[in-house]
Amino acid sequence: MDRNEVLLVGRLSGTVEELDLPSGDTVTKWRIIVRRRQHRRGATMTDSIPCVTFDPETAAMVRILKPRDYMEVTGAFRCRVFGPSAAKIWRYEVEVSSAKPFNESEPSTSDAPAQPLATLVPRQVAYLEPAC
Image (cartoon, rainbow, N blue to C red; front, side):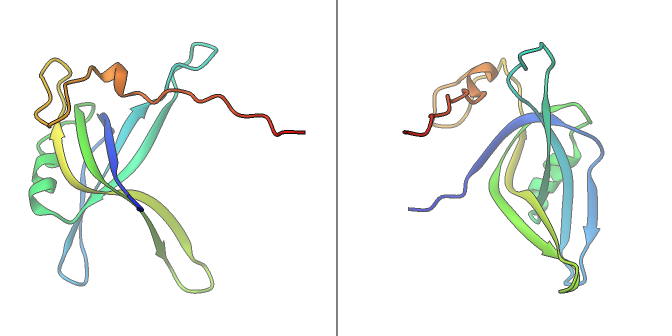
């Protein structure tokens, strides 16, 4: 069965934008900064992931956060295509269905047992060598 579920815990990168669409809907946009595992040379690498929501309640929650505040978002990965047929632009983003402030010291309210932030970082997987 196919599943498209995203859970991100990171920091709000900057100010939140709101755009009114011709349809009358409002889209709220922001970026979340998520740290990667520490690089071999000791440098910390990050990903800046674009997020959007069309839900007014989720947008209101994101607007109360300040840049660099930790947050947890859930949603789905989306590919959107913009522009005329001769010059298409492909953008990838997370369409967020819920967002909340994240405090590592507070227990999680979900059904899953509480986990510290370090355990949420994905493990590196060794690559398999092709068989000869």
